[in-house]
Length: 206
Image 1 (cartoon, rainbow, N blue to C red):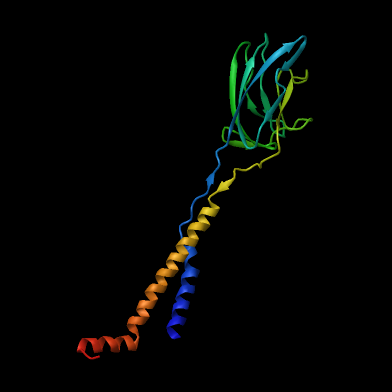
Image 2: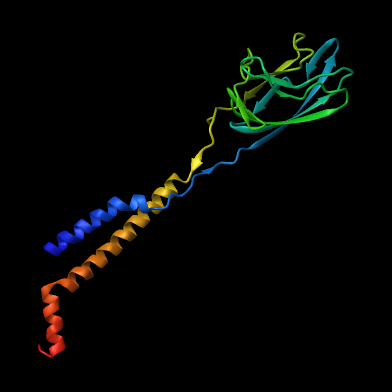
């Protein structure tokens, strides 16, 4: 009975200690998908416009690669402001016939990352993120970025939590079994009955 109590006490001690000793498995971020689109600046009749005034992204977060092509005889830009009206994403003024490519991440409809900096973009009156041409914004040369489907969340999903719990459990069980086995042999080897039996065997007694 005493031996059993000692073994149980040792087992409880191991269970209490193994979360500290276990090596955690680092979670891995899901790669952000990429969406590529070409937007053309042009004049239709007397109206300056983007040929694609609505960019629908399939999911969030997403890395958006926008190639802006100026198919006009005047300068245009592709520009996104933050909520304070400060220019954050900008091709500058693009001369006729030229292209400029921008690469930024739409984390959510209220958060964008560009050149390592996050900002809250200006929201279009129609919903989504507004973009515009600097010289012709007042003339109505604007567009918006919107989500085509249901939101999937603004932060990268972390994996590895279940894997970490699995390995912690395995390590804990293995440590417990090892400790029980060691405790059993330690208790057995130190017991009086076992010592007397070894002495009898050494002397050749039954």
